[in-house]
Length: 84
Image (cartoon, rainbow, N blue to C red):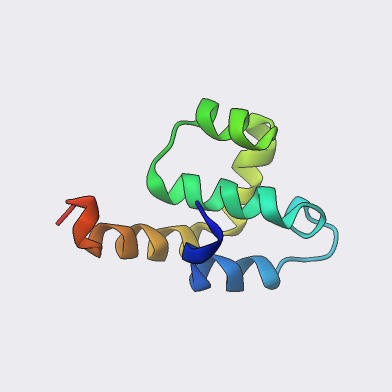
């Protein structure tokens, strides 16, 4: 994930997060987590990249399930990924 390709869908989902959530406290790591979930990375890869525990990743995933699905569809539609 780089700064040029921040998903508006994931960003909007993060912005709407409650102030008590991990996403609110660590938005950059949360965005990375969401992007990697959408890309289909393993839990271990996400934990290594973000420092989040399995429990934290699970909670982030549950709170942003719809945004992750939308992002997956966007990624699949990108021709350079070769997923179509």
